[in-house]
Image 1: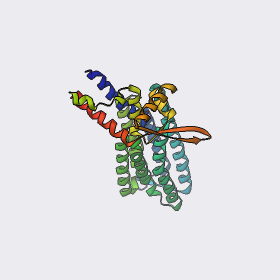
Image 2: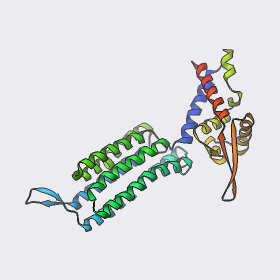
Image 3: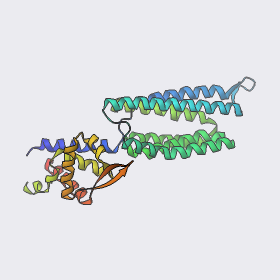
Image 4: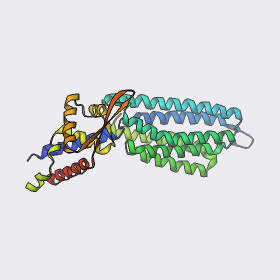
Length: 205
Length: 96
């Protein structure tokens, strides 16, 4: 009777099931870097839209069509940078763990991530064009969170928790409409960094 | 002790066959190349063991063409899934 063999068998079974059904090359570093980029972006946006109003003694939000287009450009730059960092660190990790980056699991993950994300993105654009600016920051958080929850079935389980927190934060932001940028910085910045550090410590990068 | 050993399935004694079944338990289907990459097996070796599982009725396959190239998709049959679960339970009891 060799129990060792069967213990090894079980380990092998678990490994193969994980490897074949989940995308496990997610890197904690990409979360950290994406979070930092988002925080910097939020700060720049803050400088754009909050104009000092010495007379009233508080800062006022000034949104003109010009600042909105500036914000859109800023948002696009942040998105590209954050995605780029994500791909870079994930690729590096996949190479380290000798996993294929573009395989069935990745495709499944991305398509499940993109469905809520694309729907949310289009909805946000529509709202933006109609002038409902305040609702956009909460909505991006809610839809991003839903996308993460949806995709978490195909990757590490921490992604689900991150998604749920983003949804909760988005709903709070929808209630406190004036603080959209703050919630946005919390969700895309701080939460990503916390998640990234946790993943980095748990799985390495 | 004898009963326990009876429940262990000979078909899963081999590492590669065990690997194939594990992968097919959590995926609706996988094609030959995905299995090969996943398990780090050679073409011949993988084909042989897939055939053995097929003969047991644990695995079925479906041929189709992707960009005019033949592509074979493998899936676990219900019998295969039941047998695999039974095998896992037997291992679990054995290790207790």
